[in-house]
Amino acid sequence: MPDRDLLADWTSLLRRCGASGDPEPYGRELLRRWAEPQRRYHTTDHLRAVLDHVDALAAHATDPDTVRLAAWFHDAVYRPDRSENEERSAALAARALTEAGLSEERVAEVVRLVRLTVTHRPEPGDRDGEVLCDADLAVLGGAPEAYAGYAAAVRAEYAFVPEPDFRAGRAAVLRQLLALPALYRTPAAHERFDARARANLGTELGALEG
Image (tube, rainbow, N blue to C red; front, side):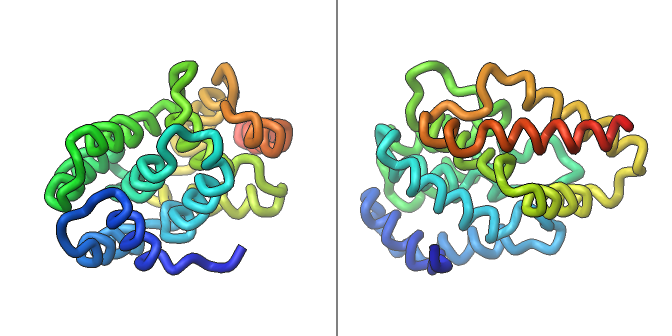
């Protein structure tokens, strides 16, 4: 798939969703955030990949454009030394989308979806939540070399954490993912990614605990 023109995508998306003002300044601010220097994995490349996966899974969603908005905001605030990134991202979404003139209902749904990425546990029947979570976790089901690059980028974001502490914390995250009732909730993502994701997670976990 060719590279997306992210600013053009954002502008088109916000206009479809009923923005009353110029979407471009909001898009430029979001792209500035996604390009902050502390990011190694949670970058514009990750944003682009999540949006691509949302597009691929859009037929499963109730409101694909609302899911796309949530994708734009889900890691818009990201500091690896803080634990409230999703909540701060949700607050940013509420403020920016309200200022842009979107409906209260749509803004509330975007906020809900962003908060869902804390746990990646959508309720049964939450089709928009399933699409966003599957798109966010699709990286886990990549080829082994792509997964290794992802894991290395995550480690680089946490370079300030001593190795023993990082290994313990990362292993806990991997065990939590493997304990999910299902890694992927949409049929298409489950078929495409689940087996390889579990293999990748198991390999990394074994290396961390070895």
